[in-house]
Image 1 (cartoon, rainbow over the protein chains, first blue to last red):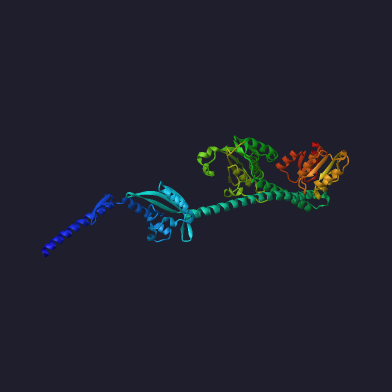
Image 2: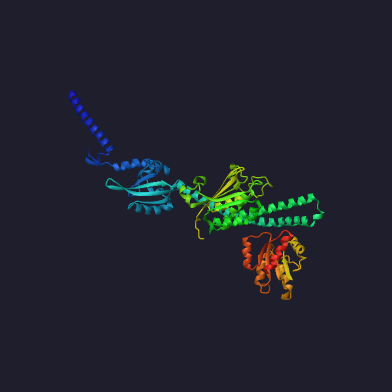
Length: 430
Length: 129
């Protein structure tokens, strides 16, 4: 009996071992997705089990997601939830499973959810609503899709937390509002500034003119009563007021450039430069200056303003010349160098470059951008008269025309100013 | 002789006008008005049209009624519309010139700083009227 029983036990063990191996193999097959269904013979007889391979991979997949994911049955019960959703609603996963999903929906959004649910069972759909978590509402997006499971269907709900997005939207709105306010303030202050510059300049000019009038009076009418040093002082008063007048007019010109000015003229640069040279006739012949102008271009813009630019450049070229030297000014076309001004090589042909070069006193190249700043003068007062606004005006005008202005120089040899203007202005209606 | 009326709030400028033009034989200076309102009162007080000024020189920058407003008053009243009006100012720009011409000014001038400038300005005024 013992032997027999041992032998039968051994058979039993072998059989069980075989069953276990079979089960292991089946499991392996299931894992590898080789089996869709299997029949199990248990104490209740044969029964068929489908392998919910789709469901399983779905679960694996959603567990990896950063979004909340739940599966609902037809009653709206949560039959499966990933841990992210449980964390989102701050409930233990075990409690979430088997609860009604609608319990998590913010009360006021429940009718919306009901509607969403009935739509979701028909086709994929999504909507934004709020969940209630503790005492607060959470903005979420629900994406609903029907899942085939066994012979049955379930509803998959992906829950995307919109808190961050809504926060960012809110912040964006606040920032936009702030920006609008700042912009309004800027427009107002810009307007004030222009008013200020204009009023100040007008009102400054009246007393200034009186200084000029009465110092002239003194000089002319009281000539016999004045000592020679008194005459010198009066001369200084007069020339200082003259200089101040020039400053005020230049400031006024500069401040006016901030306003809206139309760029609606078609300008032949050769023509305006010709006019300027005519205007400077007296200074040119006084200094015996030589001016060469060759082959210029036609651009769109504000005629008066561009005239001012070249007037300032030519005036400087005539002004900043070493005493005794014959000024020689060349004004000619050049090809814009894209690397110098930061335009695309493909845009190169859209620009016209005019170089104004002279044989004047020049400046050190490290000042080549500083000279375009307001009130920047490189020379001691008295040596060369200037307000330090002329080049700032030129730069502002050229920039309004979407162009560029550059300066290169060698001390004692001369300077070259390059004006680079686009041929066309946007929205040109000239 | 051209009867000239100055409308000017600035005392110094009224004196300068007097100083530079008192000796001129071709003009007769009427007593100056210190602003547009005073000018209106003065013109109203003149009984006969023949005694009205031939030329009114108006400063642009005045309180209460500035040069442009004074000019448009004159041009919109039949009794005064034939009087020549010039605007003069310490500062002029394109806008002022265009506006004043539109309102019917005969000339817009910059205030001079010396006798030479004043005489030349008056010569120009007399030429346009």
